[in-house]
Image 1 (tube, rainbow, N blue to C red):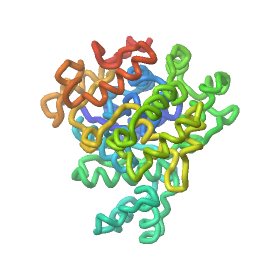
Image 2 (image 1 turned 45 degrees about the horizontal axis):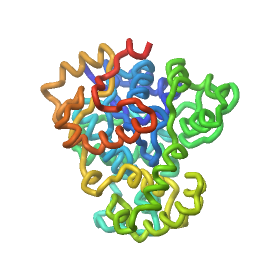
Image 3 (image 1 turned 90 degrees about the vertical axis):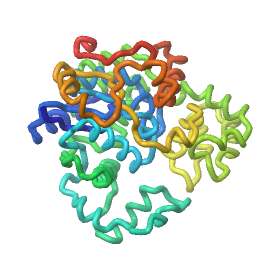
Amino acid sequence: MQAVGIIAEYNPFHNGHAYQIRQAKQQTGADIVVVAMSGNWVQRGEPALLDKWQRAQTAIAGGADLVVELPMASAMQPAHLFAQGGVAILTALRCQWLAFGTEHPGMDYQRLMAHLPTDPTTFKRFDQTYASLFQGYLREQTGITLNTGNDILGFFYALANRLMGRSLQLVPLARKGSNHNDSTIVAGERFASATAIRQAILAGDWAQVVPVVPSTTLATLRQGPLLDWEQLWPQLRYLLMTSAPTDLAKMYQITEGIEYRLKRSAVASATFATFMRTVKTKRYTYTRLQRQAGYLYNQVHPAEMLQRPQYLRVLGYSTGGQRYLHTIKKQVSLPLVSRANRDWQTGVGALDTRAGQLRTLLTGIPQDDGRIPVKPSDSE
């Protein structure tokens, strides 16, 4: 059995994702689609709208065969570390291909990688993000512009794959419909960005959502519960207002004195949106600030984030996906975890367990205790 891998968040799973799965299978001839999916927190530093089990269900219903969690230590990171984590998961799961959506599927990744800097300190600056510095340098060297989120991710997938020994064949797929961060849903269209869909959902505009998501996704979204930063803001605000700056500074990526600005802004901000506007400066992007807020909310220490994936947490599978797992289980290079036991929860899975427990406090739905992989019948 041959598998094509996809790195995703499915926040939420929409028609464009279902189209990508069909195209990945069609263009590769793969028997199985394996997805490395972010857990309860996503790359931009936001709590996932639906929890990881609900999103795994919608993915299986939408054509995925095996969904494995991308641990928080990789999922809530800048693009280059996000890509490295996803590629590591798919490589461990013996995938042959990595398929990904991009605005420019013909981009010359080999040319870009041939002009990588040899000095590792080139991108160690504090006035721009790692990705921005990378983009500027490569544009100067090659004339190729990486100016969309998916183009940037595609490059980092290629780079991560090279670092892992080029075990995956890259399959860039042209995105269907809107761009990744488009904030509106076009009337009459069947495709929309996850960003636009989330905004419509949180605004209660379900009429816009219906045409652009599969029926299983729609039913799951209507059932909920749904989470966003506004619901988490009271807890984060309390933490910021009552914690000493020295304690905040012990958390991951809380550097350069940002802890003082975060505390001052928390006092003056009744909502998370106001907090973001208050704390924003030219030096920090909203995404970086959201990730810092997520690290604080989850009390994430540096040692917990500075590591590659150490396990394969299975969230769901189809009949074919279950058969594929049985076929490769003796060949995978990381431990397979289908049920979270106490040793996993207090060991390598401690960070994801803690993030799940915090979500459970708000939703009442267990995230790891007693949970087993979802199957197609669970989605019906």
